[in-house]
Length: 408
Image (tube, rainbow, N blue to C red; front, side, top):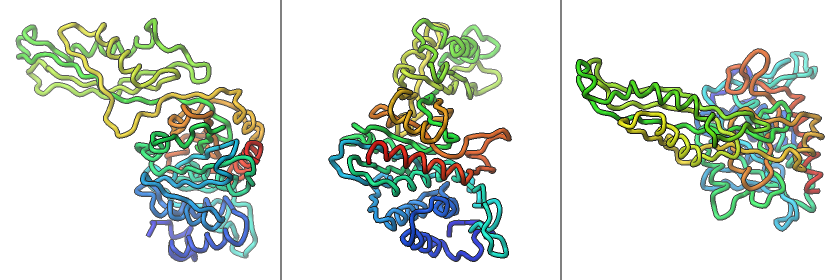
């Protein structure tokens, strides 16, 4: 059972029947990205992606493409000759954040019909994953199936855990050879409002640990109070990007930021504390790397905090590297091709994405239908998540035109 809302699913039967019906329908006629998206949103992907991944594989098979699921849960499919001169990678993810939000379609029932059977324009698809990122996936699949690659190859690489640790995406680039190595372009599907995004800030999280010496609060001078040392440590976070060797303001992304977010320290109200931890959030810009940031912050803290206080900075433990800042030359061919096809702007993306892993190997852009937020507030990751049907169709057309220019 997938927990789909009963209203939206009235008369559609079990999940297995829905998937079988969707696959049979795809085999009988050209791929319909909107029908795919309606079923995809019905599959909760916030607590495991198994049913959604199975549906994706069934969809690929129904269109005559044999998918492969690797050891890290990625779904990989290819079209075009292996020794092709041109290569494009299409990447997005099938996992979503919690909680699941049930599927709805504005303007009628789940099939976009009124009670008397007349078809109407059902303009918006709502539900978790509708824009982040099953809407972009639907558009990518439409383009993937529509092209006829003769002089190039297209690789579809769909990851299972972008919202958490990105172990799938990291595996795609960290094996014997990155899936993006030598590619002409990587297009990462995320809600960009059909704009072509050529850069994004990175995100690092870590903890500054200050160590001193306990003492009775009645004799504070006999110890080393690390809570008091927080004042110069916080000053160091404010002045870090003012140092002489700080990364310059990025032409697309602006300035990096360093924000203290959590403080922990002290054990007793009448004792000088000897241990304090300050969690910080870093939003980096190219060319700063994680290791360069760690070394620079540690040195800057050491010059700011009193000598009798121990200072140590460490990244939060995780099995994959943090998503670093990345950028692609706005003059790269894929940028102009996709922006012209979508009749859209070129700009940076405002959130961290798995594009970070691919950008070191190939020109990489982020593109897709839907938005992270609109004039009313948050959309992606919010209870009101939605995508406009027309935008999914426009994204599919723009991707098809771009792929055709590169691989056909």
